[in-house]
Structures are given as C-alpha cells and as structure tokens.
Length: 242
Image (cartoon, rainbow, N blue to C red; front, top):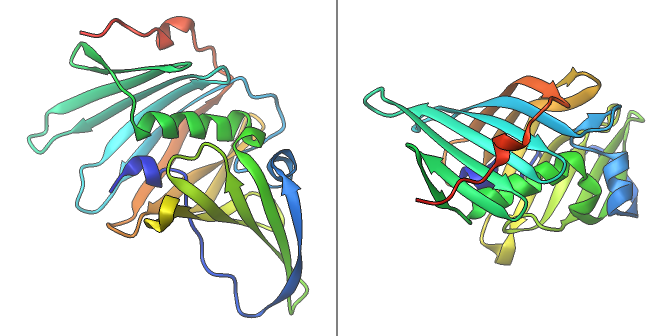
C-alpha cells in the first residue's frame, strides 16, 4: 500500500437511505475551507509539530515526527525497527521547491509522491483555501430533523486524486471522512477521522484510518502536538547530496 496516497486523502460511509433529498450550493475554495475545515483553529497558524504512529496488519509499524511551517518548510523523520530489531531512521526535508532524503548520514535528492503529499498536507492545514478549487455543498435532512452535510470537492494539487466526497459532522463542521477518486479512474482511497482533540486552540484529527482497497487499513494515531513552536531554519537546511 502507498502510504503517501492513504495518509489524508480518504473516504467515509454512504449517506443513509433515511435522509431526505437536500439542496445543493456551490462554494468557492475559501468558502469551503471556512465552512468545513479538516483542522479547526482559533489562532493564526505559523508552525506545528507532532508525532504520528502508523500500524498496519502485515507491515512493520513506524513513527513519523512531522515539523512544518507555513512558509513551505517541512521535515519528516521516520523511525522503525526492521525484522531483526535494528532501528532504522530516514528523514525527508523540504525547503520550498527543494527536497532531500537523509539516511545513514548520506543525503540524496528526492522528488516523489511522498514529498508532493507532504506539501499538499501542509497547505491543507495552513492555507486550505488554496487546495480546494470549489465544492458542492449538499445539506440533507433526516426524518428526525437533523442535518447531514456532504460535499463534492474538486481539489487542486492533490497527488493523483481527481475529486472526493467529504462528510462533515453537523455540529462541529469538522470532517468525519473522505472518499477520493484517483486520476483516470485508476482506483480510490478512503479514510475516516473518528477522533478529534484540541491543543492550544487548534482542533485536529487525532486518529485516522485509511485504505486504498488493495491492503489492510492503515491506522494513524497523532500525538504530542505542538502549536506554533519555534522551528529554526537549520532544521530545514538542505545538505549537499552525496
């Protein structure tokens, strides 16, 4: 399974047959980002850091430390143990358009889907209005009077994803899940966001369950979140390639 595809671009359950037909409204990217964000924030976001633990049946678990700033500076430090119990470490550093992979003291240029996804995810947090071109909002009424919000979203810059359906909690207006269609109908990716937590005025999905349909679901647990930490330039300096 390609974790770069499954980390955030995702899917949720089909809307209940008990829902009554609703009316659709087309929103611009900024309107959608304000109405239904993946990450809710009451403070200006300049930087963030967190640890994410990944687990999947049949695969080795690993932890990723993510450090990112709103000016397109990203560092992801991966740590895991191989079948012999030896600890492995790999870092990917993104500084604007440049990206370097660091492993065992050696660095090499990298330009793959993982770096594209890392940039996309950072924009989804810091400037979500730039990654959604438009969204069709459909508010559906259940027979008990409750509302359900479903969005048909057109993305800009999502690697390999043509469009997606986002389901939103009617009270918090935060995402509960997303189902993405891959470019050219080559498949789909899906995730649910069953848990949210709030740290320093920022509400984020603390657990993500993702799948591409060709393997066991990937469980991601986000912890040790820091909002607007000081992340100095040297963390994102690109070393010369060996």
